[in-house]
Image 1: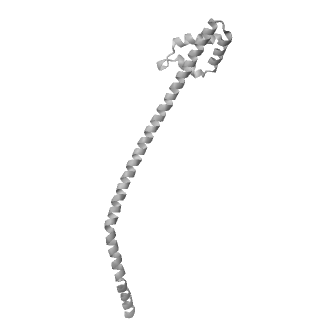
Image 2: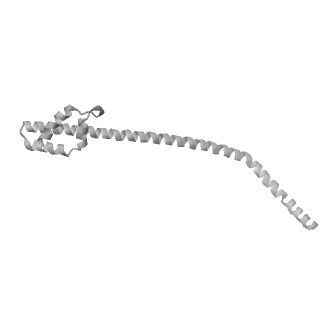
Length: 144
């Protein structure tokens, strides 16, 4: 038994140099690990900032996209109202000059307009009906 203990002790003493070398290497790594930890914390902060910035930019892009969509809708409505006015003026002018084919072409164009455009053109602010639009569209309805 004593022989076994001595053999184990000799083995441990033989490994002492290797263990001491590894301990020295670990002690040398300590400052480097602290630098790496600081760099990792700084990188984490930068990533968080970048994430927040990306979310803010994304929110602004969504707002701009909504504004763009509304602008296109407003432009389309204005174009449709101009088409409606062109049809009304064209029918009145053509009927006055007895150009019935031309009047029919304007009436056809009027009938092809989206009915919501005609209804929206009749409404003013707060959904009230615009009497002027009724006066303007009556000749078109009568011509149909």
